[in-house]
Amino acid sequence: MRPSRDGGWGVVEVLAHMRDWEEVFLERLGLTATEDRAFLPAQDDELWPIERDYRGQEPARTLERFREDRTKTLAFLHGLPVDDWNRRATHGIVGAVTILWLADHICDHDAEHLEQARDALA
Image 1 (tube, rainbow, N blue to C red):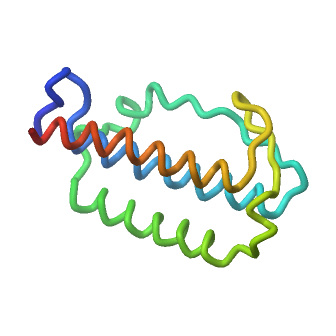
Image 2 (image 1 turned 180 degrees about the vertical axis):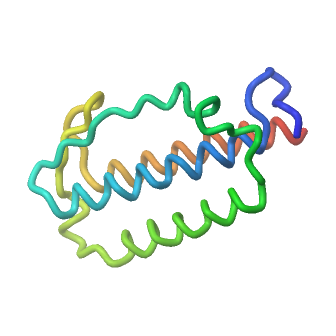
């Protein structure tokens, strides 16, 4: 797999990154839904590509794991009562956030990395 035109990640790295963050997102959603004013620590993902050998990942397996975790995230969000979307947590960098904010952030994160993957495939 080749890197993007700007020298950034290729599709393999993007898939692994999205898979790893899906675990974090699901954990953050669960904490926010179950704890009063949960604290969501910042994640330092800068070394993940090296520590977790993103380039050495098997793309099909990585995609399957991402799909499984995203299915869990969607089921979790789908099952939330309407009022719970406004439950608050404190993010280590951003400050006060809600489940709605977290869901929106997941969408923004997806969009950013899908563009990166499209660039790598162009």
